[in-house]
Length: 67
Image (cartoon, rainbow, N blue to C red; front, side, top):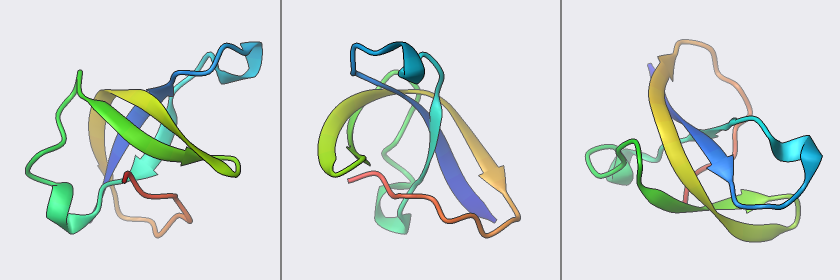
């Protein structure tokens, strides 16, 4: 299973009014919880976001990871 976090990014744009999925690295699995502020790659920069939900997937999607 691959652990993922649904993250709302802190960017003022209409195109980002939905959560984005990010891979949770193994060393952060026990720490990441809904409501936490996280740093995530978005485009070519790092931005702040908020975890709104956690999930799992059996697929191997090409997701970017939480920093």
